[in-house]
Image (cartoon, rainbow, N blue to C red; front, side, top):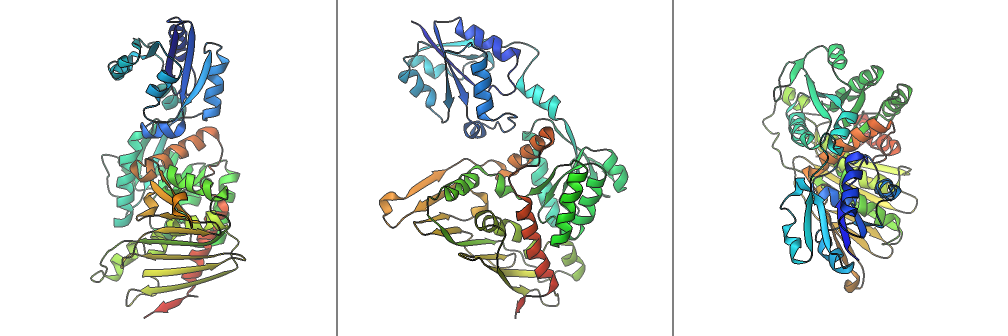
Length: 444
């Protein structure tokens, strides 16, 4: 019996896939099809899958062509599978011509010509075509826009269409009138100063535009709630731009904690800092920059609220302000108390500390080294060091491309994303509200 094996993502299974599978089956007597997992696809730069792994596996099985369907999960698995299943022929589409020649040391390699005129990439691009407008005008936000524009190229079907304001960016058409700007786009990416978020996001939602907004959504909990109400009423996607939430390693960290790996969580300590000298800045320049609480508060608070929840029973904030200002903090420490746990978040734009995340539990703890918000590695540690385990996951583009892909998927599916729950967004805005109310301890 001649055994044949082939691999693919098989997202949005189409005639080209089926024809390739039929031709692969014709090469032998028994066909094994490997369907690539989402995590492994990410390491290969494929982040636009519209269907879950379960749906893709079922679609391949439903063709009735494969005798056996397996999951491809890691680099080098093809050699392991060829040995494990005693494969005689490895085959794949001709667009991979020469790439898998090394497998000829283990079996025969056959490249099959692909069906012309159809591809999953083109189908995704046609289905997902989203014209997105960019909003942002300060030094801080221009950095965010630069990263966004760099990473959006990796996501099929997204077209940056215009930028709001009197400045240009990478050849984008600049439009000064907000209503005209909204008429030109299907969705908006908001990276403006936080003080403008509520006004700009609410206007976009009222115009029926989907919104991806850098956190925080607003500076009060009530405004945050209003935005979600508007999104629901206008059937729009409202998504929070905290890139860490979309990193594979961070997602796996949360799942491990929820599984009870380190027992009951009793403490979360999060540190996010960066250095910038604001000493010579005029009040006008400071007013256009993000302070510490708005820039580092959301990512610093994210693991606290996603692990311990948003029902804290106590909150204290201590901040050091730039001299002569009442709300431009260069350092803040946020302490939160829960019925059975505590959390501490230290953030700064004018000071530096080790940017680690430590989650302590009754059985062990998890440590994510600096800079933890760019999570690609973490370690689970126990009393007995022999039980310690390290976890590595590739992170491309700081998680921004995954964030954009998730935004497009949510728009296509017509379903709010689950990466950052509305309760978490509201809790972040609650912290912002307390800070701006002045009910904090100011360090001299």
